[in-house]
Length: 605
Image (cartoon, rainbow, N blue to C red; front, top):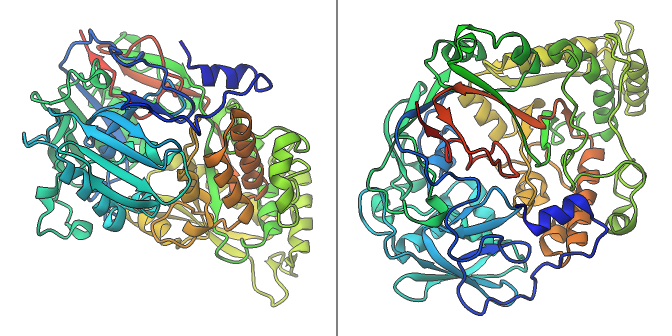
């Protein structure tokens, strides 16, 4: 059964709006909370709808990652951490359902209560909640975690903390946060903050604790073995405190989770072919169609599956750093898009089978529509008409080539835009500005990303035809993270996953306040009053229609901003796994997303 909000949003956006609960006051503590109305699962629910409560415990899931790591603490800015760790080895006050756009249910907290306008939120801890060492999770741990993460923790936590007026104990097991900003999402974000053990870090410099400090948490899994840069292994805690919490029933079924790291995609794939790894995702359709016929597939020991989802495409491609010339000029960025011959690249890489990302929220009901902005979307955009780039209001679509290698139409359009921006070919055919400076830049890529490098190489060749000198630089994962974190790049590979419930994270992705914050996620350096205002609209909207209109307007401004050279969108997920690994038949609307794999999978011969 799909939540009412999502069903209405997908099927009939012109129907009677579902009002947000902006003035809805909880008369008493609740088992869950939703951004839109009430959560779909009633108090006393047995489990998440996509979990198998009869799943057996045991076995192992082993996955491969390309790259490396030098830290196992995902809560600070120092070091590169396997991205899975914060999901697998951390736990929060509430947990998110992947079958609703944004609903949370009690995890460490047995209940949640908010003020009439969500100006404050209270969480009451479960009396049985405990860390992996057996010590209880206390209100002091909660308060310390919020304060520490909000002041010296990873940058993704600090924006939330700036909106907290106060945090205080309201009893032995209850804590209240009061907010200084009108923002309905803050109560939910508070529920998703990780809770760490205060005692572990007494006398320790949290922000610079060293690579061997593994945070003690309350999650079902504990890191039990690792070699920096090579592998990390997590073991299910047999004494996990929360096995009977409804949110956890049917989850955390494997005894062992292991992540193996490889320097390149080729050895990672070979490890799967030989059985060293027993689960993989495949993002290249051509390889999926031609290389998944190895013996283990032929013998039936490996199962292939194609999964669907209903979430936005997000943005994947090459982002241009607008902090640096010449990418601070939108005309240059437009020309770069004209040269980027996606149709030819797609044919070469996938046989033309992968659809292109057309906007940040494409493939979803939140994506911008073709043609001129209308109705509420236009109303949101018009106050900023003078500062918006061409296409934001009147309509914008990415350039489409004829698919030939030379892309003559795109080249002509690119040269015209370059010339308008002050770049013209010299006698040697090199594009130069009025001072004679050649147009040169670097594309930064992480070592081992062979598919991305192949795309970049084709783009470099296309740029040469218009007189632009570009070079591809490969760096290891640590350098890649460092240079991205300090914005030390001209153009870099970029991937930003987006959800059906965009909220405060949009400020971190695109907000002016974060454009120059070291370690931030606004890689393109967007500084736009329109973007900031539209994010504000989506956070404070009081109707479904206004929320959707605000996101669609934001999508228009970002896409017409011409910040990224988009490549494929993955509207499906291709996975392959050993036949003794299983998952429930009912897929959540988010599909293959953190919280689904390995969470609700199990091992059974």
